[in-house]
Image (cartoon, rainbow, N blue to C red):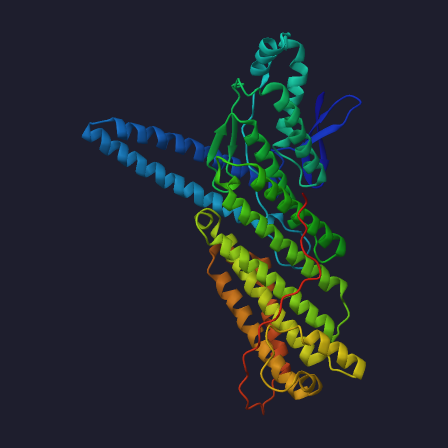
Amino acid sequence: MKMETIQGDGELFLTYREVGGSIRKGCDPFAQTQRSKLQHRRARINQQINKEMRMRAGAENLFRATTNHKVKETVALELSYVNSNLQLLKEELEELNSSVEIYQNESEIISVPMIPLGLKETKELDLTEALKEFIGNHYGEDGTVYEKEIREFEELRQAMRTPSRSEAGIELLMEYYNQLYYFDNRFFPSNRPLGIFFHWYDSLTGVPSCQRALAFEKGSVLFNMGALYTQIGARQDRLSLQGVNTAIDAFQKAAGCFNYLKDNFSNAPSLDMSAPSLTMLVRLMVAQVQECIFEKFALENVRNDFVTQLQIAQEAAMVEDVYTLVYRTMTQPPVKDYIPFSWITMVRVKAEHFKALSHYHGANALCDYYTSSKDEMKEHEKAFVQFHFSAPEGPSLSYLLQDHEERRKLGKAHLKKAIMKHEEAMRIHSLCKILRRMDILQEVLALSHKRALCKYSDIDHEEDFFETGEAPDIQRKFSAAPVLPS
């Protein structure tokens, strides 16, 4: 086996090539791509957090053990410094985890950014001596005979620490995950610990965890598989059908990874793999799938007619509903104290944004696409009767659809609601310092708000003396639901 460096997909890869065999490929950690720089900074902060936490543990032990008053004062001062440093490091890590724009598609055409996850970091693992000793004691064979195989396994683990943001990266993680099954059967008897410790850092807080259990290693690799799928989904050009389909597939698979972890791995030592955190991640991924389904529906239904506009409005209402659920999940303890504030803010912004879009498209249907025949009237009535949660006040449904003025009044109410929700989304966005620096999201919100204002201006008449009523809530409906792989 020899190590080579090759170029691909905008990233440098370290590859482990077996003669006549397959290539195992991981990103070169020293390659200066935006993503690798971010991951390198995350690794550095994780190490600093680990150092500070060890110092804090030592200081706390000394504080409890000593009876000397002066020593207690000195240790208390040291603890305050350490806690201050830890807080600064965690804030720096939170900012890194909020850097979602680095993972987005580089197309000049703007689209709403998605939330990806950074990978969990791990330490290098030296297995040679422990495995050689186990082979000798358990199997009665000379462990040195298997040095080549042990080294290849270590190289595979080293490669999977920096997977490429592609299917090749997923395959690399999957290959290592599958190898752990055989590793578990051969080297981890229940009656004797192997003496190998697996060190992993929490993906969001950087807090280190260490366990002998191979289940922790498996769970962490599976978590990284889900995280990598989120990065693959976030980078897609979702303004093309191929891109949006790939994004749907990636976010569904990410949700599947986190859901499997939640159902099959208990007593996780790190918060990112705890049940509340994984529940939140599954719901976030499902919401991002639903958002992609909305975008796909809008791309595929280019016909501008009454029924299509109603369907787009109901799809948007569905996206608003799932993001509202994610927001509620994120604001419950212990999750709310753990995840980046920018994530909570972005999810809330998206809920308001898609509610605004649902009312905007509802207004479009009412004001721009009129009924021209009896057959069309039946089709429109059938679609419109299921559009609102409750029937709007005023004339009957058939009269409303035939009367241009009544349609304009109701359309105006929907536009008023859309403008209010767009303004609320921009207000919430402005409260988060990190999101204020995200030009893409700011531009999407501003353009959507401007479009709704222009539409309102077009249908507003000077002689309108009636008070614009409250638009009824729109019934959510989806053309397709997310499917979680089992």
